[in-house]
Length: 264
Image (cartoon, rainbow, N blue to C red; front, side, top):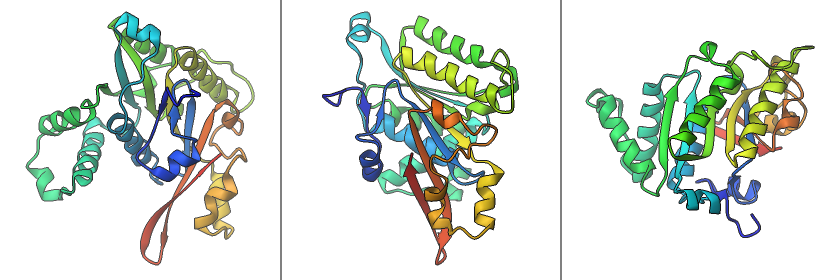
């Protein structure tokens, strides 16, 4: 870490500055925003950038064992088709050839996935995208899936879930409101940290946070008002389990859309 090894940079220079270089293996990262404020788009963008802006940084043990470096994204919400369309548009825009709705009508999912796969694996990573019904999974299902991948010869460098709290908290500590959700995050964090896996998940902000806007907080100042104040929906103390919090808010100013970003 002192030699900037094990740090994966992103495609946004200022966010790399905010995070002292990028995302570190073993970190637990939360992306916090209100509903419909670009959480999925932001996390998908991060996933693309982690794959395209970096070469794998394996540990000595992974090199000796011949492990294949893997980036995993699991969607508990959006369909894989929607994710593929976003990723295809994003990568094409990076090439300078934006895609129109007419272009999409002539594309098959196979064509999109083949193109995306070729782009995201060019630097040496393996990629797995999966859509899961969250009601059918628990934290043990997620853990067992990662263990299965390891048994197949992979070393998971990044695990991204969109988003973790969609899963039931079966098997977690039950108690006052939010205790089970915090315990769910803690269990996944501890599992990933021990395996040197960067875990990333969006989290939705509570109605109390939305009330700040109703009360007149300027939207361009919203992320400054909520940072580190426990506005996560369902549990006010989840931020205590995170190594890095990134707060985002999509807003309109003079008919243009902006994304404000602040770290905790």
